[in-house]
Length: 163
Image 1 (cartoon, one colour):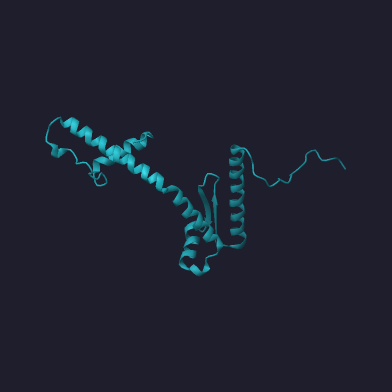
Image 2 (image 1 turned 90 degrees about the vertical axis):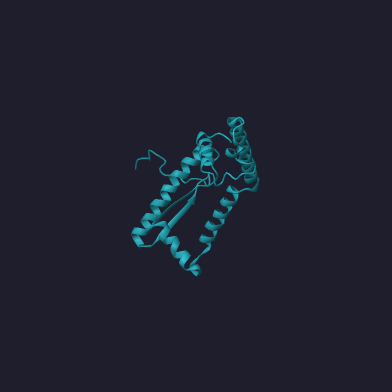
């Protein structure tokens, strides 16, 4: 018999990949493999399935049959059928919300909005240059209900700049 020309498929040692780029590539490839296996499981057994994976950056990715929503709704309709997977996903969702709504960030954002409000007020007063003060908003005036305020916020947001 002739000797093998290649080593063939080698077993991969299970350890964390150090390089971020290599880790991202491996994640994408492995995720595709998991989705393929889930699809095969559906075809072979007729099971209803949902796969939810969180990327290294924390983004949720999912696939399901017949759909992710229909499988999840089955759990929501019958709470007694929920298993530990639901609780893990729910805990992760709550953690992400808490990360996004950090109190320190909210206070900082409120300060930026107050500075924007003061800047707008001062510019309006300056532009009126002694005209009727009824056109300038009062200090402490809420911009939340002012349709013109969202235009300024949107311009700053699109440019990626700070307020």
